[in-house]
Amino acid sequence: NTTEILNGNELIHFRPQPGTLIIFPGYLEHEFSVDHGIEPFRFIHWNIQAIPDKTIDEINNLLNTINLKETLAPTMTVGGFQSQNIYNMFSKKLLKKILPINGFYKKIYHIHYIKYNQDGYQKEHNHAHKEKYSFILYLNNSSGDTVFKEPINKRITPELGKLIFFKSDVFHRGEITNSTKKILVGGIAKDVV
Image (cartoon, rainbow, N blue to C red):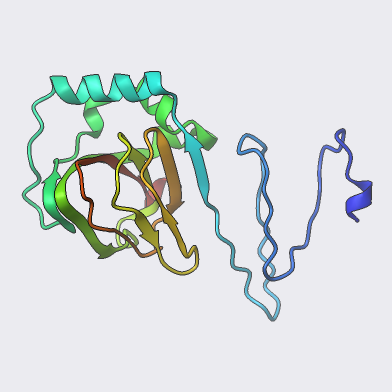
């Protein structure tokens, strides 16, 4: 009964109906109980947050001081540069500034820097084979929206400091950019969540 929810409530049990959208601050502790009844419970856990400009400047300064090497592995990046894993170049303090939610910064196992040239894009893919969660951090304003398929069905325009955190099994792609586009892409390994 939503009329009984007050600012002082310590615990709320809520049974969502199909199509229910619940929005709340990410710092609130929460969990989802699985009902093994007739209908399987399916939810989308999706966060968007803004990283302060000062933190973006710190990341860009770091990227400018390290020798970025292009990955030799096949990628979905077309018309751009994708670095090797640069996770170990980031301090725990900086990782926490990037992804402070639920201590996930402690569970990041890879970060790649991608710089798209004009007309560059990302082929449709997901990261389900190796990750539980993924994130994209936009390091500049640009064109070349990120398009998420089912069950999110959203397009996100790259904006400086915007971070998207999503389940890795969601298919997504980066549309063709008409300018330089810079992002960090990272992941949370399946075995540590």
